[in-house]
Length: 307
Image 1: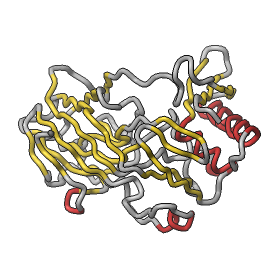
Image 2: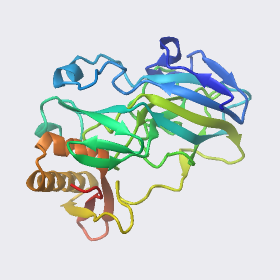
Image 3: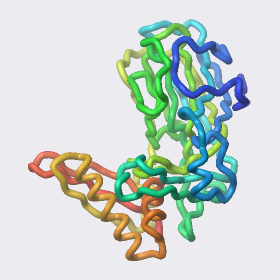
């Protein structure tokens, strides 16, 4: 049992980071909090959502639960956020929106998939994707007067989308305002490194954290984690890993080429459409920086699930 529970009712949800927001809960250093979170679609997507449902979503930013004040936290301190548990509720969504994502010109239309989540597995058009739930957006209020968008990450955290922040991991953040003012949201059931279509498996759920002041100095986010570090879906000795390499003059160009090649492979070897392959890349394909020293950058896209 957590020391505190914070529900996702409207009065506990906000859509930007702002040092002037009033805390909805005050805790002592070392307390645990079970935090209910709305999905990134702000709870507006129905089961079996259609593209027009994605088009109709009206939210000013990520719905964040909080802020939570940590008693005694002062600028210059470090907050340790221990991830103790992340629970999904059996449903999630991945969607594409025009003008967003890593390949916006190539995917100009809305698309969406509603995931059936069962324990530690999610189902995508007959493909089983292992789940490793984590909070995509978690952070503190910045010192600069706000409001500040929840979209770009900052030194005080926010929309980091680090898929290794699974239970057992700890995120260290610099405190810039009195009380810290911690908020969390944007839970993901699974995500590939890159989150290329701009969404992962977006879920409502509950994340349980321990918030404690730590005896270390950090200027930006630091993470302690045990992974998973294998390509998404891969288990040693059980699943073959498919990989394609993208080459370019910089990381973005090489990454885009790797994503294009993986989409082409999926469309060629499965019954997936290009839009479906793009969404699978966002949720189950890892982009790894393979080379930067020989004039051409190489980024490799890895897929560990059976297709």
